Length: 146
Image (cartoon, rainbow, N blue to C red):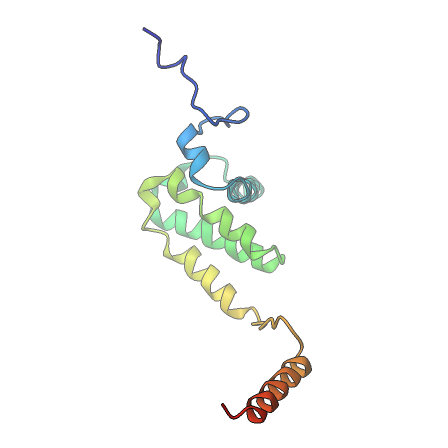
């Protein structure tokens, strides 16, 4: 009988990353995983720059909230793209499961950052073109009384 370690899953392309199972690698898109990696690297660089080389903050909810809130605030101060900051906070929760529902401060900071950004309504066409199409539609509708 074959060992379970000799069976390779069908459809697998290329080597898997360290610590990542086949099912985990197929649960999200490659783009999403690469963005999570970029955010995680940014967060680790922040920890090193701040001198937080140990993982004691992981066991203290208040310290974890403070460090992640500082990370978000630092990203805002230095005009880092918001998605990178969000992707830096997001992987902390599955990596340290006990923090999952105990990190309100960084998510509140991210929400406040989002609210500060201006809203841009993107129209697929210019306003003058939209008005011309509307006027044409009204004239066609009025010319055909059926």
